[in-house]
Structure formats: structure tokens, C-alpha cells
Length: 282
Image: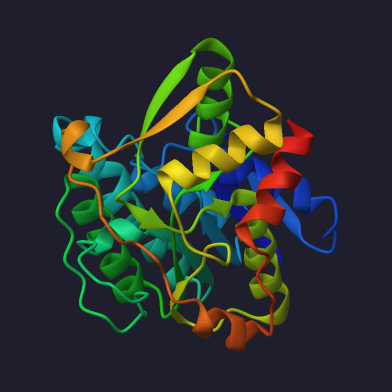
């Protein structure tokens, strides 16, 4: 298959490129904004047709959650309109698309894990634009797979794990929020699942994926420091109210992964195992 990967310089895009070497049976077109501007519908149509693309994995997104509150137009372009252009182009060819979405499509008021059937209720610009992106992709490409994920980190780019290691080495004390609960996701594990779906065949629908287990940002930081061998930094728990941000954060964003595990017959690694793997690479 000819597969287009967008956002190849991001966390997930970089992990996908590493896995491509293990899956040489497909032909990959790794693109970022320099190779293909996904906000340009004409350019997308031409690229998809010229290269006879069979499927698209859209790893590109506007992910600066707080900045999105002031950059609604750009966020809308990248998270809502661009996925629509991609879905339209591949849908016309009868191809498939994997669209990456987020726990931010929910408001985070649940106390049990969110299933795919649950009503969405985003309360940030980022969450709202990602939800529109989901709806656009499903409408324009019959063979589309939406994967909602949360708390993504990797050895690439900027992310929470790398920031906490850096701050842990720089500062004697850190305050981290303890009343927001979720499940971290190692981008390598998400990339692996996408490859499994591509190789077994895309089963259209919405899916949830993160690593197994549930944790707060505070506990996650404590684990990062423990595994990274950082002992000189005192981490203290903060209430969300003590650390105000422009965008509202979900207090509870645990995703139920039953559907993706059953559909693709996969086992999902426990968050701490994956964190150890990532920190070892760092």
C-alpha cells in the first residue's frame, strides 16, 4: 500500500517512521508542512492522486492547548479543516484514514473510564476543534478510524516526561497537580497499534487508546523522577486551582480501551513499563 503520514516530525510521526522499517511491505510518504501543507485542499488532492495513496495516518495537529484559546483560527484550520481535506481526498479514492483525536473531546467530569459511545462535551478550543475534525473525517471517509488518546509522550519533541526530567535536574522543588487523573500514552505504543490496524485491516469507527493503569500528574512525576534517578528535587502536590491555565483541563480523562483490544486482539502495556522503556532510550 501507498501510505501518507502527515505530521512526520511530531512525537507520533517520528515513532511511525521507526516502525516503517519493520513494515517494509508498504510504501510510505512521510510529510510535514515543508512537504505538504495540509491546510491547502488543492495540494492535498494533487498529492494523494499523484502518489496513488491508499491510506492516510494523520499525525498532524495543533496541540498547544493553552495557546489555542487565543489562536482559534489556526487551531480550527489544523484540527478541523485539514482532516476534512485529507478525508475528502482519500475518501474519493475509496481509501482509508486514521485520525488521531484526544480525551479533550470530553469535559472530564466522569468518575469511570470513558467509552467511545459516551456523549462528547469539550470545554476548550483545542477539544472543540478536535471533535469537529473527528466528525468531518467520519462524514467524508467511510473507511475511517478515529483513535482518541491522552497524555502523549515520547523521546521526540516536547512533552511532560522530558519537561519533568529537565525541571527535576534544574530545580530543588516542583509543584505538580494531583487532582487531575488519567492514563499516560507512550507514542511508540500508539504507533504500534496503528501499524497493527493497518496490517490487519482498518475497521471503521471510534477507538480509545492509552497505556493501562490510572495515575495523577503528581504521581506520574514522582515515577518519572524515580525511574530517571532524580533524587534532589522535592515534588509537592498542587490543586488545579493553584495552577490556573487559559484552557480548562479534564479532571478525569481515563479512556476505556476494551473496543480496540477486542477488535485487534492486542495487549496494552502498563504505563510504568512503557515509561521505563522511554526513559531508558532518553
